[in-house]
Image 1 (cartoon, one colour):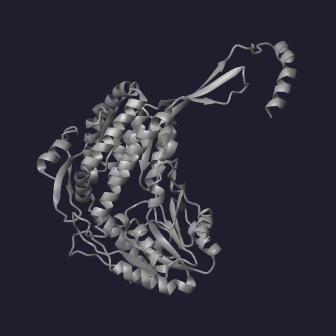
Image 2: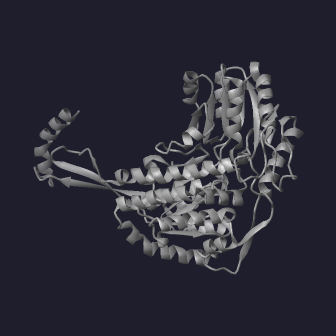
Length: 504
């Protein structure tokens, strides 16, 4: 991307005396300097967004939905630019950049099609038929704060920003420093599509300070990130009695069932574990396989993982790109060192690849896992999976559920049995014969986590309705006056008792 294009995008941010240097993870070379906004600048952005929100809310929902439909077309027309930016800022492979753009297209298309019906005033069952009527109206909460991470900056941005906007809210979004360009580019396309600039504001800056400033000033906050930070967001939101949704960490299992084709199961594990170099909240980190085929499965998996193409390329030549920064590289190395030091056996990988770039790390498979290892319990968020054997399906289910997390899971094997096992996994999404894409692509279905993996759901009707306030309106038809004095209740009681029996 040219310096002129970068400067044009950065011009949407207020000028700032402070800046941080953003580097290309694939090369370690500087891309640009990103301004860092102060808390005072955040406060001004919030005030401006609040002034703009009523005007946007007064635009009919069908017109707001048409803007999303036009955005869909612009995203499609500019998909190569979007993939270039995603690779530039995150270092992911072209395939995984394409997957992210495809998800963004799906979000724009889905919310454009469903918003008018979802937000339409809904008639409800009256408390006293004929005598009363009732309906529910959905109004925007006002100003929505959205905090998006660096790993899937475009797809996750669209899953939260678009439903908030189509519901009639103004949005103030904190983009991660590392991926500000792709967020700003997507916003510029939205403005071309007809969404007012003032309705969607993007800010950047030091994580805790900016995130707290947003949470402390909006009417609803949607956060995607770590469980530790999610707890902070929840506490601050709860003190103000505002709504929030959180998609947090995961320690996602894949169960290989008896009767599964082992080569196919190995490919499913690779797709589920190494998408975006494992830097995905729903990626697979634990694989459970029957003990009687464990050795054979491990050979299949190790052979396939070792043959993966790793590197940087702006075409579809590479199976996996780089980690996004030194913190991620160090984290993965620490997990591997801890596990190997405590007896884990390396089946593939377990090494950095500095010849490719500063943060490249080989896709890694470990076995001989025990509970003393960090790998057994903690989320890695990198290209590292652990293989564990089991004897019975009940044992496999118990192992899969034995975690504080519950975001995503996968079951691979005969479909009928796999669906039965899927119904026993304590996770917000469970994929049968897939790693994560089958559920992630199902935009009409709610997505979120159980246990420590989050609060609330995105996608489906809830994906829009979480950004609204429901107003119930009850109407007396006038066919009969309701009692206001005790003696009137006494006179009406027999009739009401009869009506209760009829209604049952």
